[in-house]
Image (cartoon, rainbow over all chains, first blue to last red; front, side, top):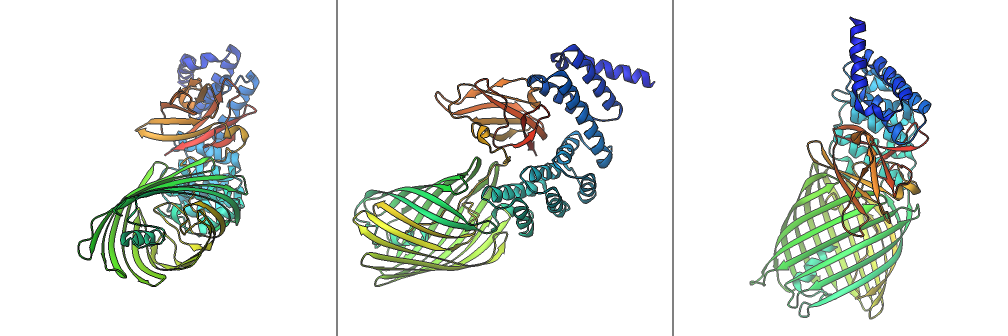
Length: 192
Length: 379
């Protein structure tokens, strides 16, 4: 049964015409990783996309394979944290947050703190860290907002912090000021 | 201050406004400011402010437009513009009606954009030296794609006493979920070449608009027929309608052209829904704006000054390069419409067949291939 499923999965991947842009050796390696990931219940589309991105950018075969393999591993890590029901966008956002510097316990805390989709919460966390907010500080403010803030509020919050940083505020201070100012529904953009 | 200017205009008695003569006036201000927005660090800025106004020959209305270009010490720049106009009904005994329109937009650094538009109606009761009015404003204010309704209810009283004008008002502003009330009093005194204006106010009953007292003062010293020196300082509150945030400022400026009072330090800042940290030199050469049109159809606009060709590539194109269309001949704006599902996406932009780069307006991330990729999230 497992062998049949594996064969079917491999067949699906092979038939994906997009992967024909890869050279045969790279394609073979990528398909193997994709199949393995699918076997574990991980989404295949992000992996295919990462391979296609490498092809478009003219990356060498080993780099493409390594990038896809690394992404598969990260998807596996965050899926373990977020659970089997996590959507593909959530998993992708969680990988971005993980790579930005958020720890696995922080991801678990966000999962517990927030009801509903985590995509925006995780992407805001990743953005804050990318903006220079230390991972611990970013995690603290996002965790503070996560239970009650709507997605739109989180976007507003991120805007406000990035604006502060653009004006010269230290990133950690900007995040702290904004969360202390009460970045709650519908008000973050217009608060002093 | 704008309200006071309106009152002066409605009465046709302001020193800088002569209701019997229609005219176009233009001014240009150049100055330096020190600004501290609430929750921010103090920043110095150089400001250039052109303004133009047309007045109806018989004082029945006016149109004005104003822009401000700011260069902060950080190297960031801000640009905002606004226009407003009012039409006044003929004075019927002591009553006069007013209908006004205002629009504005602003852009800060490489992230954008705030805009608003509103219509305003007022009824004035006045005689030669005193009066009062009631007014209501409705409109929309938006950050990026998120528009919010605007409603402002206001009332005011004024009195002329020799060279002094006193004005007091109360208003209630509702902008989306944000609501606040302001109580404000303004005094204006003119003597020879000097004009002094001061405002004190308090924000109360606020939900999301901040609270507290504020005050501003401006001194205008007329140097010549078309030249004036202005010094202004104070603290002002958040204005959720125009998108400015509360702060303190000190400004010194030179005004050329027709001389009339007032200068304000820079206030408007705006940001992009997908604002990110792609701010290096290469990103400045391509700025991306993302606008959801319907369902999963998304319009991508790339500003690429000087480019002869612009391509994008992303997970929504299966990483196949797609040539964008130039919006108009010789334009720096390139556009394309794509079907993009909600969630996190990766994108690169390429100018004239060069290297792929993360466009400004996205969050730059390492792409695993020794380069950068722009990341954005569609809600």
